[in-house]
Amino acid sequence: AAQWPLSAFAAAEGGNAWRMFEVTTRVELLKPSGVSKIWLPVPLLADKDFHKSLGNTWSAPGGDVRFVTEDKYNMGVVAAEIPAGVDKPALTVVSRFATRDRAVDVSGPSGAHEENAAVLKLNLQPTELIPTDGIVRETARDILKNVKGDDLVRARAIYEWVVDNTFRDPKTRGCGWGDIKSMLETKNFGGKCGDLNAMFVGLCRSAGIPARDLYGLRVAKSNHGYASLGANTENVTRAQHCRAEFYVRGYGWIPADPADVRKVVLEEPPGNLAVNDPKVQKMRKMLFGAWEMNWLAYSYAHDVQLPGSKGPKIPYFMYPNAETAQGRLDSLDPDAFKYSMTAREIKLS
Image (cartoon, helix red, strand yellow):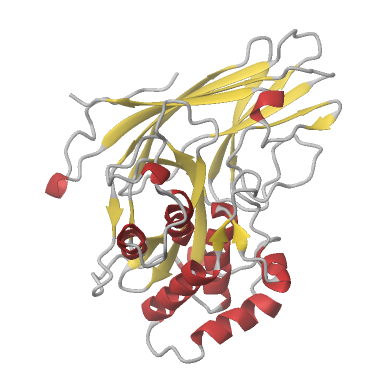
């Protein structure tokens, strides 16, 4: 059983108080066949100054559940195996975590703690869908050919290029898988957060700037008045969202989210806003250096081999996954699965 420390995070400096949330994910397999396997992500294992896991509980009646840590990215996985005889194979995970808004002052270095060299090396390497050579490197060189300055200036030029040249495509399933090589080759720069923020990360890496995606879930409405940038009900089954960050010596890891700028353009009422609309301009400025933490972070992991799975690797682990004797289920189809996710804020006294 998890311990829920209710009051440990009540206060924070400068009025940026910690908030505590509880997310319940329930998976039920409607068409079991043979042994059922279900995998769910849990909140980021490593504590950050903007995010702390407060523990998880789980249950899978009639099945075995184990908690597995993936070493390369230090990601937590709850893995259930349910034998063929169980009528309705199900797994429920309840996670609690605390968040507070995150901002890095990009006007000058703060002397931030220097990141471990192995972590920086990992976040310069290609993944299966985010190469750092070929057309990705050529595109980064083209963006930066007239840019003079340090890695912060260069990362900002890449951020502005992604905001100016991509668009949010509502037809993209889920969050998009982030196949940036295909996007660049076809010149189809449409997608969702998994595509657009992967584009930012890949271009940064190919320019020698350590960068990474952080995969997660919106859990509450935005306090900045943006309907498009929050979960506006307790049902967060389709509220997955990934973000990006990059590293500059002296500043540390700097949050960014060019994909949400394009979400504001497309979705913020009345919709299809101009890029120079004040609402867009405000978020464009804020989302280079800050994240509103109405959001749960799961992991930085790419190219994930689910423990005990016979299926292929997945590009990232942000959705419930399951397999039966018929093979892997479609993680983007919660109704056929079926799965549901709910979030609630727990008020700190």
